Length: 529
Image 1 (cartoon, rainbow, N blue to C red):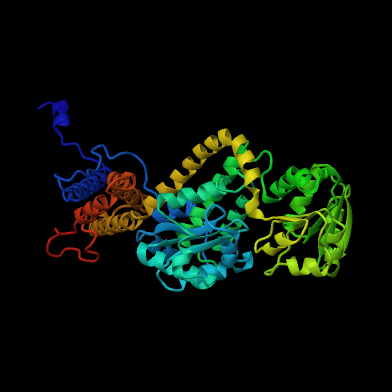
Image 2: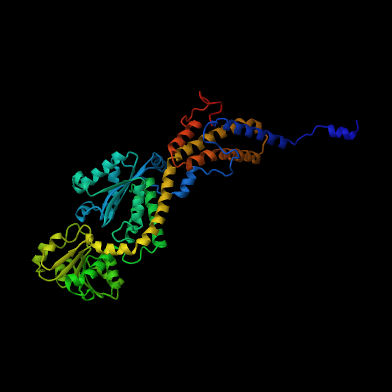
């Protein structure tokens, strides 16, 4: 045989590294085949035969990147809140507003902002309500809460409201509204967007919803994962409405509506042009500041302010240098009222500061005076209407301004609702995904257990590999497992209807309900992935 033929017949010797890599590939293919063999051929759930590309990010990392940080050391841990939220919590709202209840009922439930978290904690104290947040303003009192047992939670919250208001449940039910699920979500988004306000598009309510969210995630808040996310998303939705539509133009707050109403009624009630009326305001808080802003925009230059102390009125005088303020303390209030034609009350107090008895005892009868009460609880007792010459209005009497305002904003309301539905859909999709998180976590953990076990089993055969080559083995095995899981995980996340059946199917398929039972009856050697 010629030397050339001998060279051609000589068997080819592979380098040692190549032989080891071939062995590694065979092991990994075996792992893939073993994994796929446990997927039911009759199941509608299949892993993509092409093993779609993409690395599956761990669920915990993914949630951290999309969820606000609401950890509170003295409350439930993040894992406990996630577990609670994943149990199938449904969102609910019970409340009353200017659309459903008279001011007499609303003021019985009014809670100052400093007490919102206390009220929320009391609601969660029964253990029936998992998460809660209270929103209390001059026009509404609403409780947003999440619970897995709807009926018991509704009863618990209703009883709490009845006890707080000292009203029989039967009487309370005539004034409150209750909404659940998507209806509750939609209601809050309309509130944040200013569409449910007395003055459509007013911006004050957005600030109040934002405060409600911030309180819910405080150390003593009870917002939890679902309610805090709901409030945060609603705040974002309200901001979009104000920035992307013209719904905030015109009279957009209770204060501006009060200025508009009194201007509109001045000639009829007082036979006096609004520009010539002498004005007084009782109180010097935020509502007063807003009211002064709107009165100044109408050209009024003289206003009397009555307050318990001088500090805030003096601050107002500095903020509005073009207006001449007469500042008086509360013991001079009726002297100021006697010199005024229109008096606005926006004091922070629990009992009325003006009543028929006080008006009579101070000789304030027989002269036309317009009283506009924009405080809740009310600052003016309804019996002042019996005083000769007095005309009194409260927040419920702003309907004329509301009708005018709403007529001008119909087009903007339609555009705003489109934006709000987009934002509400994002929240609903996120909430729906929570039910699949435990199953996805279990699936990833189970797969990682088997991957680690198979690599460990082959470790003796891989002794000759360098550190770099072993790292390549780890990356390769993880990549294969993640691509195998991509199909099932996507199927779970994208399921919209009958999500429970899809989750159950995956749990049965991968034996996720048999944690820690590897290699036992019903499963093949090495586990049942």
